[in-house]
Amino acid sequence: MKPATPPPATGSTLVASDLDRTLIYSAAALELTMPDARAPRLLCVETYESRPLSFMTEDAARLLTGLAGRTVFVPATTRTPEQYRRVRLPGPRPRFAVCANGGHLLVDGVSDPAWRERVRERLTACAPLDLVRAHMLRQARPEWLLKERVADGLFAYLVVDRALLPGSWVRELADWAGPRGWSVSLQGRKVYAVPNPLTKSAAVAEVVRRAGTARTFAAGDSLLDADLLRFADTAWRPAHGELADSGLRLPHLRVLPDRGVLAGEAVLRGMGSALAEPTGTAPVTTEPVTTGTVTAEAVTDPVTTEPSGPEPSGAPAVVPEG
Image (tube, rainbow, N blue to C red):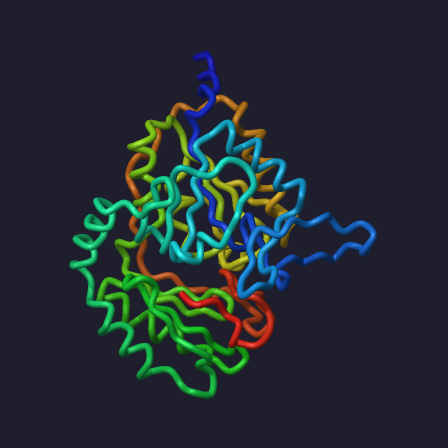
């Protein structure tokens, strides 16, 4: 029998993780169902308009600090760079970060111009943003549209009242956007329209190339994370979120039973344990995954689904810009 490949050396594993509702959680997404006396101690990792907004448990903070010291840790988020910079994660500052769903690759906190140019070239294959945004707004209705935003000139999203959003609206938008090279994703109170070439996996593949890492771990909860989880050699998803609702299963995907902020702990604990595991015999993935139209049709209770992304609970007026 061929002996197992020994674990890679320290620093040769890249860990790419979504942030919101994967590692960090708003108050509305914590899901603290245990008695108050048994609730975990929380660390605030983001403030917005002078208010605490995002949290992780103190144990998760300790685990992330240890993991980031042993790997190339890369936050991979749909947040814009401005929104990402509000987050103060424990541990060493990541050298690389993926923002705007792959539209920005931050290197030492600065958006890499060569990567932005590469993204711009790829997006010429899709319908222009202005066309997609105008169509979304024409089809939206004032009784359920709370606000609309464009993220760094790359993609558009609407913040909606899920209780009033017609059940067929997202599918109809997806059917229109798909032939034009755009994906549609419904996540909590946000309806995203994202060009197909704009993926987290593409940016993470570039970090793999630059850092020279041997294997990739990834974690995420939303449909916009699906390509990243497919790209990774080993991946994790919690029991909440659009991927859980859609029942995503992959041979290398580890499905956690945990929900809410405790899932963040479970993701980090699982990644830490996996560092000691031998690598498989399959070749390491080095190419990004191309995704098409995705929706959250499997969500059975759209009214009560918790919002994903950096939205706090409460009135729409306090939804962060971006």
